[in-house]
Image (cartoon, helix red, strand yellow):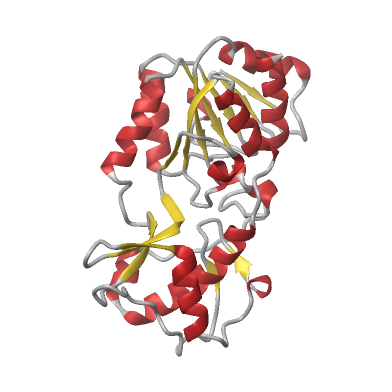
Amino acid sequence: MSTLAPRDAPSAAELDEAAALLRGRTVAVLTGAGMSTDSGIPDYRGAGAPKRTPMTVQQFLSGPEFRRRYWAGSHLGWRVFDAAQPNRGHRVLAELESAGVVNGVITQNVDGLHLKAGSQHVVDLHGTVDLVRCLECGQTFARSSIAERIEAANPWLERPESVVINPDGDAEVVGVDDFAVPDCSVCGGMLKPEVVFFGEFVPAEKFAEASALIRRADALLIAGSSLAVNSGVRLLDLARRRRLPVVIVNRGETKGDRKASVKLDAGTSETLEALSSRLLG
């Protein structure tokens, strides 16, 4: 495995090395938070990322005080996500799928930007902030409808531009003791966004769908993921067992660097664009 030095963009020779591994192959793609930084959504582990302890599912389920804090922050974070636009990296992956190079995108992100960019086959491994589910009756709701209810019940809530947004769509907020938490309009049950919380497992059907993409591929491209989450490492190991070439594009070290065929230590948008020109040229 070759590890290429960090810089604003890899050299032509380094890009040629990575492209040679992908050219003529069907490529499955796995993306993480670094994919969306150019769209204004921060990375948990990138340079300058603040240290934080996200709420666990056990906390969310344990008491109303946790749910008040979560829903207040999550609402403000969702407003920022909803306004975010795909960057060039997202659009490049959609173009590569349209061209038949990429067979689909497995994403650890919950921001929905791959779909906005035009990707057709997206496995949202950790869920999506755009849907909300009742834990009692199973009814699902569009996040926009829940947002309208939250704003009507909490007109005092601060505006999104005044808070710090996190990669999972949550935000740091204070003074939420009076926050009115939405409940299910069908049965009155507890609502939870369709995202995988810390302490939860990736749904088995989602992991199976992601695994199937890799089994139908001839190479794996990982973009913007530090692979700190076990599900990503398991997918990388699946590709390794199948002896697929693996290209990793990420600023900084990842847990998969030693398992990659090539690691490009660079930003995703500019690197994916440069790789695309070699694969489609």
